[in-house]
Length: 256
Image (tube, rainbow, N blue to C red; front, side):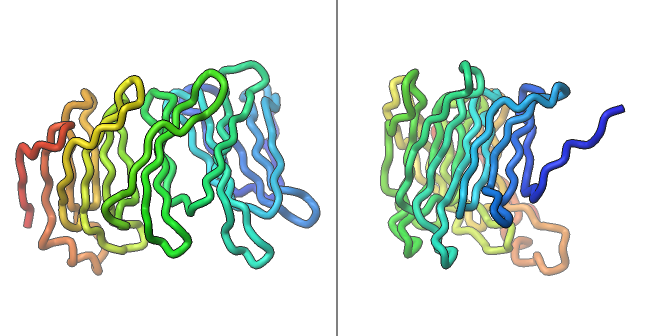
């Protein structure tokens, strides 16, 4: 008979997208530090663990389960957010080595390249301005910054990579809290040797959804109206637009 896996102060857990491995994050309590534990199922063997104090953290699996990022933001005694460490676990390598990338600015979002070994980070300064997009690549020895640029607007909050990687859309998407979006869009690409190409800038006002097609050739952006009663603000803009991966608009359709 199998008993339950028990973790004190469990905050979150996430399955690997490809393997029978669970990443578990438990929070700090009393004299026990916060911990990340990688557990193999069904053996329950502990593959790796890390302990941290005075921090908050998020976990991000890469699509193939090759890497896990533990995004750790240090907190001061007054709970003010300090620098963020991106701890990259190389799951396929012996003893699961960890790369650490330190980001001094505020991290607004972390986004793995689909099927790849690169990732994008959106940052801003403490005042919430001076937004940047930073891109890193995991080499054989370490993670290295390979590209970056100042974003033209502070509204950008998502990077949506194509299913086959290389191309991506940086977008201002309406938040779950109900804040509307300016709908700013940047279509971009990153070549195999890490040259960044900004292909097109556009917008889709009050944008709520961005989705790639499986071939990575087309993108759909949409304004959808939630079913809650207080969501009529979206009804006037409801509709969708189709784009090529380079940002050329193919079709727009309003839906009243």
